[in-house]
Image 1 (cartoon, each protein chain N blue to C red):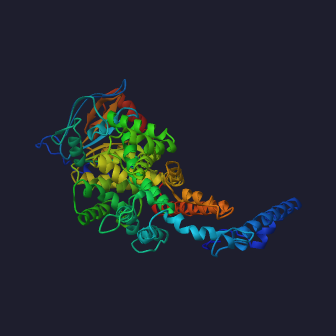
Image 2: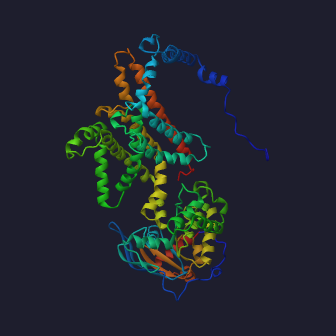
Image 3: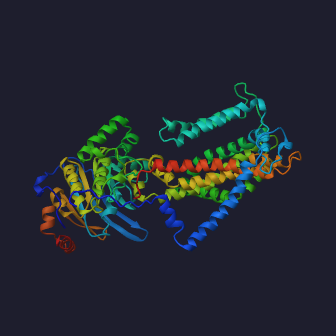
Amino acid sequence: MAEHNSATNAADIPSAAQHDAPDIIQVEGMHKWYGEFHVLRDLNLSVRRGERIVICGPSGSGKSTFIRCINRLEEHQQGKIIVDGVELTDDVRQIDSVRREVGMVFQHFNLFPHLTVLENCCLAPVWVRKVPRKEAEQTAMEYLERVKIPDQAHKYPGQLSGGQQQRVAIARALCMKPKIMLFDEPTSALDPEMIKEVLDVMIELAGSGMTMLCVTHEMGFAKTVADRVIFMDGGEIVEQGPPKAFFSNPREPRTQKFLEQILQH
Amino acid sequence: MGGSVMKPPVSRLAPVQWIRQNLFSTWYNTLLTLAVGWLLVTSVVPVFDWLIFGATFSGDGPGDCVGKGACWLFINQRLNFFIYGFYPDAEQWRVDIMFALLALSFVPQFIDRFPGRTWFGLFGLTGLPLCGYILIPGGWFGLEPVDSSKWGGLMLTLVIAYVGIIASLPIGVLLALGRRSEMPIIRGLCIVFIEVWRAVPLITVLFMASVMLPLFLPEGMNFEKLLRALIGITLWQSAYMAEVIRGGLQAIPRGQYEAASALGLGYWRRMGLVILPQALKLVIPGIVNTFIALFKDTTLVLIIGLFDVLGAVQSTVTDPAWQNVATEGYVFVAFCFWVFCFGISRYSQNLERKLDTGHKT
């Protein structure tokens, strides 16, 4: 797979992971079933504050389902998920309090088509965080500038290109000032020439010390920004490690096969 | 061609060319055009003769209707009854105010550049029913009470239709949300409500409300026939409305629900700010269809003895003083209904155009 990153090597972005602070995400012995189908098997993961994790794996390996469990878009049936000290249970208030602190970027952007770009960005801060509208708009414009589309603020999502929409989606999530950002295949629905503009924004974000969990097939991105790469297959975490070791000498045969397939061309 | 701007080819024809190309291109097309033209002329001319050229518009009484055309004099003389029913003459200004407010709320909606027209529309949905509640029955602020049995004509039609429309939309939204709820009891109740009310003809609902309901109510606890009819129509209508809106809710992609959830919006905000604005916009044609159907169904109140515009006309065309005025009466009723239903339809198209944000993802 082509490397779209503007950054040239892994040393570009120093790790921001904090070793002394308590883990911001803890997943312990987590299982999930869809009906009879066992999608996630005994997942264990600790994420440090400021850590950047890339999750990869073949399609159907459960990687998207896994990160969707972290803000409870999917429900897990067994085990524990603790996000910033709050355990995810059936309690709606706890779920909403976790969701306030966890931003998410989707494969298909999921912008609200009936609202302008600016309104998309202000909606949650105004209604959830109770930020005054003026202030929310100011913050939104700052983030739109950061993702380099302040001039599109008053357009509707339907008038933007895929890459622009995805950058708005990132800005929208950031406007809530989340502690964690989840990316669910953020570049998979984009035309090749638009992938770079989105990855550039994500790389810039990584440099700011945000805790990031990213499901992606962009191995160049993983090499540049990840502190840790996790390989999933068949609903399990097969292997994980720092990108250098992960890409240069993967231990598990399944990982080797996967990397061969995607790095071939 | 380097650098020059290419224009799309012009495809519009001059009228004469268009006629020649489309109506008289071959001998049989010419024949068809002439035949259809002849039919149109021979059928339209008598209609206009009857409606306008040979019609009687003014005069003193039945004796003046001697022309071959329609006797609009009849409508003219009975107009007061057709519009207000038995509403006392001295109090009719109250109804006139309501007509004026109705026009004030909705006419600006057709003028794109009208300043603050949204506020006029909002008034139509909130202030207008409130004004009607105070003005029409009276009894407040020294207004003389007018019993609802005296209401009638077009005014009664509008009251029933307006209450039915305004009240059924929010109830329909709640029922639609309830039917998609994850809570089994709420979902079950909503399904039962919708399926029961939707499966019953409106005539039956009205009949039950006016005849059977009083039998079950305790002695002395009897409220007005009109109010019972209004409640019946509203509940019946909201069951229909719920299903139309549910169609819209189901058309919203799952990603919209997820994105709203992921931002931490709770259930009501998720629905109110993200899902419903999109869903309602999608089903405007369906909602309007239901409104128009309700508007015309209000004529059924005739069977429980309420005199709406159709009932008022029907009761007067049999007046022996006037001969053969039934056609004029029913044409008038048809015209009244057409004006309002066409108005609703135009307004909805206007709304659709205004709300279009060019997304079809």
